[in-house]
Amino acid sequence: MKNFKKYGLLLIIAMLVAFAAACGNGSADENAGDDKEGSETASGSIVVSGSSAMQPLVAAAAEEFMAENPDADIQVNAGGSGTGLSQVSEGSVQIGNSDVFAEEKEGIPADELVDHKVAVVGMTAAVNPDVGIEDISKEDLKKVFTGEIKNWKELGGKDQKITLVNRPDSSGTRATFVKYGLDGETPAEGITEDSSNTVKKIISETDGAIGYLAFSYFTDDSVTPLAVDGVKATDENVQKGDFPIWAYEHSYTKGEPDGLAKTFLDYMMSEDVQNGLLKDQGYIAATKMEVERDAEGKQTKK
Image 1 (tube, rainbow, N blue to C red):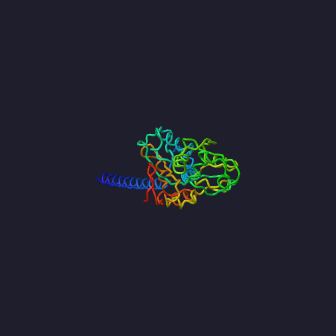
Image 2 (image 1 turned 60 degrees about the vertical axis):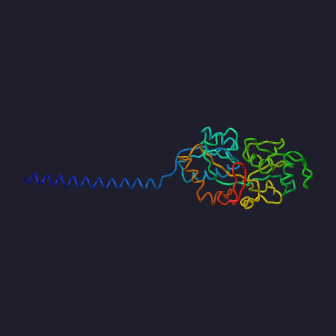
Image 3 (image 1 turned 120 degrees about the vertical axis):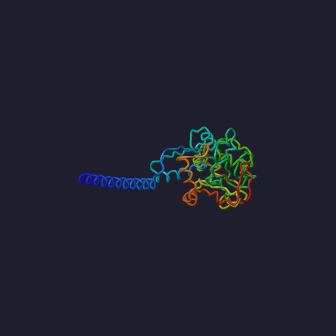
């Protein structure tokens, strides 16, 4: 009887010890899980394509994001807004960047896409510095790009033949410049390049050259951005609605984003990017705009 009681007591003690150990291990696992969750970084891979005007911002943001999340891989390609919209619609990329609303591009199923307005970018005509002008009226700008004015001396510049440098029809930069800079006039034939970087290089190296670029490309004095009708091409003038050539920088997804695409877009809209990197790269936060535009191009005060 005594041995039975002794064994029973030992069994109870063993059970209590095992139960306590199990509770302790469960608590430790839970804490470990919390620690892991707290330090978890984004992972996976996505491809972003589209607007060359938007590329410097997205590439810089992707570089910083990947530095903070080494298991994430974000490939940023240009190709123009039309390419970005087509590829995201087809599902071949996860994010398609565009300077224009999806509704403005023929053949794009805009109702299947979700618009994320990441920023605003100003655009203007840019000339070779030796041309000798820094301001142009909109009427003269249209005459230059339609080929009616063929020499800079007609506008008080040097006696140099005007060489037009255009983007292809698929370009959102071209669509924005034509719509708001040329009032819809079709540019005459000239040099056509897919990349804004190449356009800038050609303008800087070609006597009498003129093209158009986003403000984010005016990082040095290799080209001269033109004021229009006496209004300088500055962020402040775009924000107030005084400078007419600007566009939203759209990041489109096919349906609501998830996974790494959502995490990266959330990062793009974070204070660090919107109040820091975005301005450093030559863009404007959409929240700082005093005016807004719809897909039809109608501009109104906020």
